[in-house]
Image 1: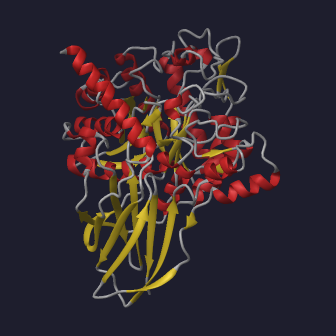
Image 2 (image 1 turned 90 degrees about the horizontal axis):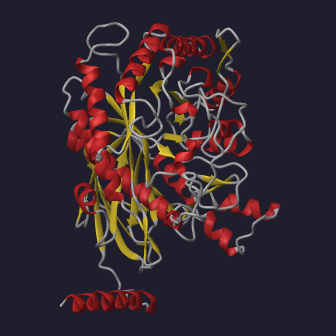
Length: 567
């Protein structure tokens, strides 16, 4: 009986492979109708997508880093928030994968502090010049303060043991008073350099993922560090915003235990500095990641894993009545965990160069709004932990927004979000998935074809995606978008598209023969292909009784943005 079952499974797998590769799977999908009601107001849209971060702070002011930051700042009407690691790490400021340093704190031979804000200023100046807002991450431990300073500088590269990165910078301070003074001096310096009003708009946060090896201390030692840190921030600038704890994976019981211990202390613990009950907190942070893998040689994403982490984080926050109203920042919110783990060594990360990353981003961000609403919490932002990796091979498959100064398809989803203003409006129809089904099952059956829509005084925008966890070929889906409540007799339609043909530098690069060293002419062509492109020319369309019907063919992993404008 067991052998028969194994034989059935083998035959089933072979049949599925044969069907896919012979094209018999290309059955025309059922038409999908999506109804958008501009009159169904769901309240102001928070730009939770206007948040980005990365490990390597010294890339900030390098050639491609400055170019990408300029583009990120320009895609949004509101200021973009930026989070970077290693802002207090000791070193010479040279960039490397999973490494960065500023040399902000050293000591003389007598143990007296020496503060040097040169590199930190260079990083923050780059943000401020572009109208961006730092998420000032207070970490990691300077060498002179670490309880275990050696070894300190790691030399990790893709393929090495990931645990090699956790060196002397990950340990608690040997002197909490000196640490507190370092934080105090940093905040005071920031106010002096940028002004009180500017610094009041920043988020000051402590550390990164202290529930894993980023923190080599105990939970209580992190809590103690938080008390000293929050006290120092507030002494320097009482109106500053401070928060934490940036735990990762709240759906994991180890993470949830750490998260709850921190939250319990915030509410009712004895403060290590003041001796009073509780500690200051202005926002709450945690991380959520998906889990791609290879199935029969093809990438299979797992959006459900990420949404379960988000939902559990929201549930934990909602369980504290006095903290439930606080802004939540998902400090890293991504399809998986390691931005610097390239596709060449981690083939499950092959989704990153093409449209699978962009469609996943569209579908997952829409559901973050739904999860927050269902839990009744205040989601402020979701940080996409992806930037750029300077001087690496073209399209190497890092989790980044651009390669060698050329934008990848995923960045164009954020350009689409940047055109969505005003209030969120209702979307319904015969749709296969809602946030709960994806949270519980991911997208393993039908394609997730859905939309996210907004309206302001003179425009409306509808983002439509065709997403599936499996990166397998499929026929284009016939989709009709019906928009109700459209004012006037005519509206201007601009239809933007991300797919294999449009807004896709990766496909353009492959058509060139995947050159390892593109010519200047090829680079110019790739830069153009990396921009968000219109599917068709803008057109004025007729409105009948406040209704517009728009049929389209939407490829799997494709994303459209329909922007309507009227007088």
